Length: 256
Image: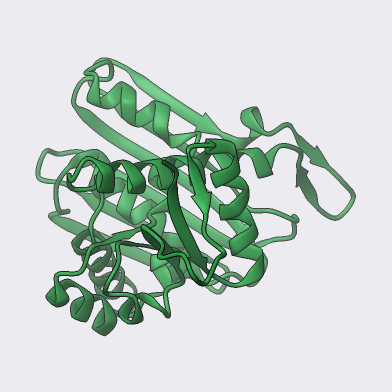
C-alpha cells in the first residue's frame, strides 16, 4: 500500500517535491480530493492550519518565532525541513562524524554564496543549524559582523570547538552554492560545489550543471526521514525546537 502525501506549496516548490517523491517510488502524491492523505508537505504560512495530520514544513527559516512557539505548544506532529542537514555535500560529513572517523569536532567552516538579493538572515539559518547539529550543543560565545551584502558569524562551543560561517548575497550566478568543511581531532571532511557540480564560468555569471540533482538528493532525504518517522512511530532527527533555537540565535546575533 502506497503512502500518500498531499503537497500544499506554491507551484515551483511543489514541482521539486513531486519530482523527489517520484524518484523515491514508494510514496505517492495525493491529488484526489476524495482521498485522505497520510501526511502533508506545507509552506511556512500553512503550518497552523494543518494540525490534524503529520506535516513537513518547507522553508522553516521563513516561519516567525511566534508561530513556532504556537506550533510547539500545540504538540502537533510537525517536522521542519532543515534542508542543509540533508544536502548531498553535508550527509557524508555528518556520517563520518557520527561514525567516529573524524574524532572530536573542532572547526566547522562554511561559505554560502546566495543569489543576488537573498535575505542574509534566512541564508544563515541553515549554517547556524548545521553548527548546532555538528557540535551537539549550544554555543557559549557568539560574534557577528554584518555588511550590506555579507553576514559573518562565529560561534564558540563549550567543547572548545568553533564554527565560522559566512553568507553573501552579492553573487550574480543563476543558482546558489556553498562550501563546507569540518575538521576533527583525527580527520577532516570537505564538501564543495566547485567539485560536486562542475561549475561553468561565464562572462557575468556562474552556472552549476548538476545543481538540480543535488537539490533532489536533499529533498529525497528529507521526505524519507519524514515518512520513516511516521511509519515507525519514532521521533525525527530534527524538531521545531531546533528551528526555534536557531531563530533565537540569529535574533541574538543579528539584532542584539
